[in-house]
Length: 610
Image 1 (cartoon, one colour):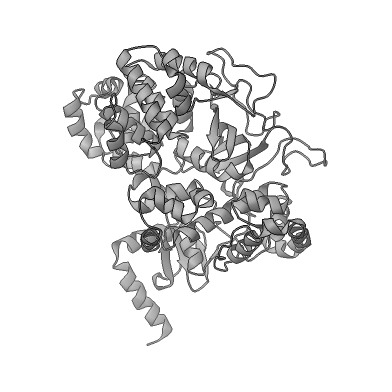
Image 2 (cartoon, one colour):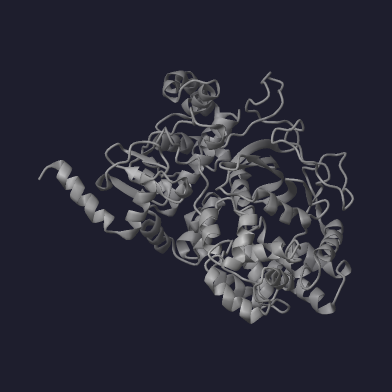
């Protein structure tokens, strides 16, 4: 038997697997809808690609499909320099799935391994590290440490390519325990030194081809080594960590349209060193100012999801305007402000994200939470196709293609906002939340001295992603949403309304403050709703709404919601809760997205909960 015939037989065997056959067809047709949902590993060339890679289609026997880049790294493959498989939206599976692997990936993306280690990750999921590793290797092809290492390497690459931070600072900002670990991992994953990666980005921005960057990058190597040498020995050796497999570096996108290049952090103004606008920089002032572009999966109803958030904006904590949304938030290492606006094109949508971080260590958690807030990774074409199969819903889908499910940046805040929104209008809930935040909200450490809380009607003007204001906190953002501890201690003097609702809010605050109740993206839908409905004053509507926002659960239809039923009636759908639930069974597993269409059809901004 010849090698060619043996490969053909292996290919025929693999095509008998329906999952492999479906992915191979998607890859053969270069279907960009599957970018980020799986990775194509080609063992004859030693590279891995996105499904839409324009390279010649490999034989089935030479191909293995992976769910994560970490699994491809573990298999000894390097990223394709032509299609940049890492510069795509993430997998939608981590929201649509509710199993252990998906919940672990949500926490890994949020930086849990960097903060708490693998034992902490396993503890939050309720399993032993050994069992968790076994499940992740079986499901995703890589264990938690390898998945976290790939995540750290991608964050480091983002900082190297898009900022002028000293290389030693990039190491710790990306989550590495020492510069030595950082150097070893970058060399193992990308087969280049940090300095070479940085120089390659500059060559690409200057118009040089990716293939010419290695020689040019050698000049940056000494700078990277010098930064390492200047670092204190104690910093170099904080935590031992095994290095990852050796894999060559993906090029930074030479020859690709800007919408398909990896996200870059840029400053829009010259600095004291004379860098021109558009050159990477670290901005002066309170915190670190950055700007980046995040890819979204098309079609993307970005205007709709920003409007949903903007309608509920709490003065002092949030600001919104046409196509923009800004807010304050707490991150694991400190507070931050973030401003979001639409960018890119209809075929390659992007989100412009301008942030000021109290600690650059929070960059990775910030990116993860922004992506979840705006549901950037949703498989919009699959959702629209499924919902359009219902003739009564098809018109709404055509009117708002790519509708998104608004997520959450803080599970506790989302729960409080849902409680305030029970059986009241959006405006009433917003008024009550404004009073709560004005009285109990913590002053933002990053706030500009001259800013003040604007009137409730003031909005943030729409602007281009590279505005003249740099990455300063948006005027009017001056406080953080109150903590559960503060609401439990002082909420009784601020809260107004029915006694039962006040008691429910104070009870939830006390449970969160004492640790009796804990909310996290590590929860399964069943676990989260069970914990919530066990508390006085929380019923199925509130629990379902929180699960939909916090976990991104795609298959929740809140038929008890009056506005949702009004929207259903306008589309000719049943308005009775039981009849609507029965009819909506055909929308599974996308009933949460169907509910967004029904709220929009009602001519209302959705439920009162923020």
